[in-house]
Image 1 (spheres, rainbow, N blue to C red):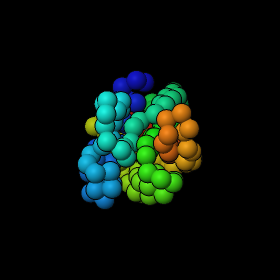
Image 2: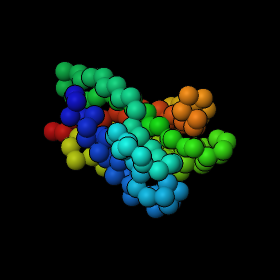
Image 3: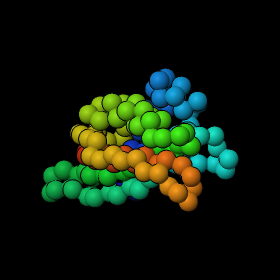
Image 4: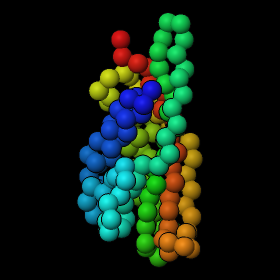
Length: 136
């Protein structure tokens, strides 16, 4: 099941990196699994991933819940919200191609933006749900 999560993350990364509007808004392809030290703001990171097996006697597949985090040092929530609005239509209900398997469904489930006093920044969190049928 870990391979399915890695494959989906790679496909999501490719879809987001290919979006010219998002890349321009971020000031480059700043989409990371783990952000490097001293990366300029704003940027996007992959957050929590949960993978559930929904296989039956005749079909194999996974349900995946994953989150994306938008990091912003701008004054106010607007920058984080604008970036989130660019991400959502690129993934929600879109046919993100996978190297193996078939994406059956990708839905946007949740979004929020909060100010983190300790880090003095805004963090937006988006959660998506994906259903994937295994190849073969």
